[in-house]
Length: 336
Image 1 (tube, rainbow, N blue to C red):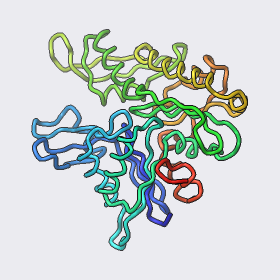
Image 2: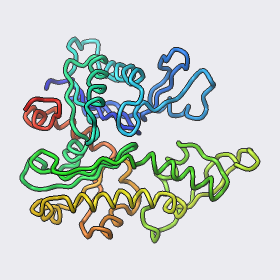
Image 3: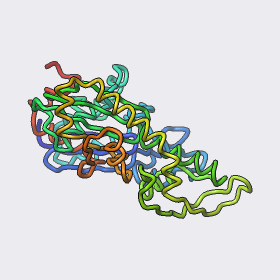
């Protein structure tokens, strides 16, 4: 791979771009504002996210990535063109090769959509890498050794649970239960308990600031704005971290249950390795307070959150840009 080649994490919650020789050059929310009639992009990232729930009828703010895969091909193609263009300089003459992270259980149709959209955006060559593999590399795990590692990557749309050894996935599951599902659960809980309506951005803010996985952890409060469901008037209420725990506990339990089932399906020798190496959590959803303690309680296996878990996937892709041998070993669309 050459200087200027790109690694992209097309996350449901965030769009991150790593440029060889520079590091992470783009980190934006996965939200795009477009004109309703023409489909022309008006804003990408933070500017577009500010518009969610506030746009007039002729503009819509959309999330083109749903459950970790492309939900709106035309919009994501335009967005990728914009992202690639932002990384180019006036002295850039060659088209970059691009490595893109995809969920563990990506289908052949979804793979093709990513390759076609990235090629149309200006890539000279496209490599696809499974997100759990990239996340494990970005978390500093030695996945090419003959030692079993376990990574749980909790993103916005998907939670990928994978056991990895010798550069490959031994056993894995990809759940459509992750950060967005937690946000939806918080919205429904607040409506049911307080008869109060909040939007997805507010729910995400609540989750990130006061969410907790353990009921015994210290309780915090957060004042939020929204609308009274009974009289339709705007107002404020205070939500507690106990509320958030009650809202998301079923989702967290589903992730833990699948983690236990993955361990049961893991070959004994590799399971023994994981008892030593532990479980590593990546992705923005892993930042819920007390989540490692919940997993330790349910499995008895030491669990840690990776450093800067939000960026593990794109950092792992960045490391692959520096090693063609490892990239060719893990790319799922490259003939070994």
